[in-house]
Image 1 (cartoon, rainbow, N blue to C red):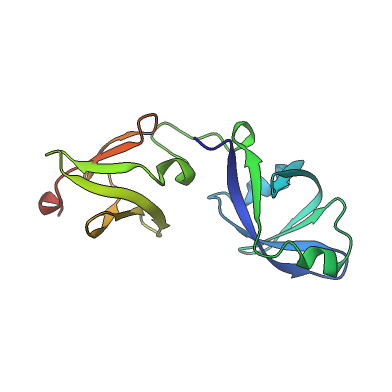
Image 2 (image 1 turned 180 degrees about the vertical axis):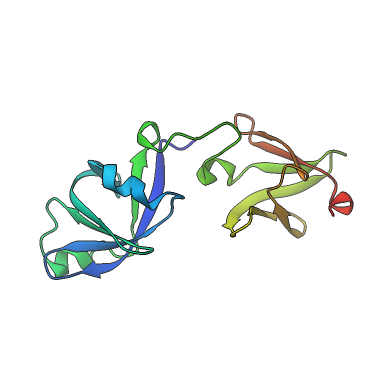
Length: 162
């Protein structure tokens, strides 16, 4: 399991004083308000302040004081230590832990590995790449078991999905 989890991607600068515009990669955008420190390129940085927009976050990071300095961070990721991440409820998983899991069906057929998790309004979808690509709806009626420790996801055979 990864020690750090990405919670946002720096997509641009904001203003002339070094603020960063962040595309959030978390379910709860309000979690940014509680941040005291973040990691960018594995370097710990102090958060000075945070402003929430409709679907973006503006962060002021200590030591980034101009638009030119902020521009150097474009496309980088904002990360937090796993222990500082939002706590999950039973049956919830960090996307970073799902990616790379081997997917098999109940018959033992190896279907490939989770390449990405697509978030939709109704449910997540696991994009599995193996001999063929497969989109697996993350529904309790399809996903039988998720074992993060052993990096394995068991699903019902595809022909039984309805």
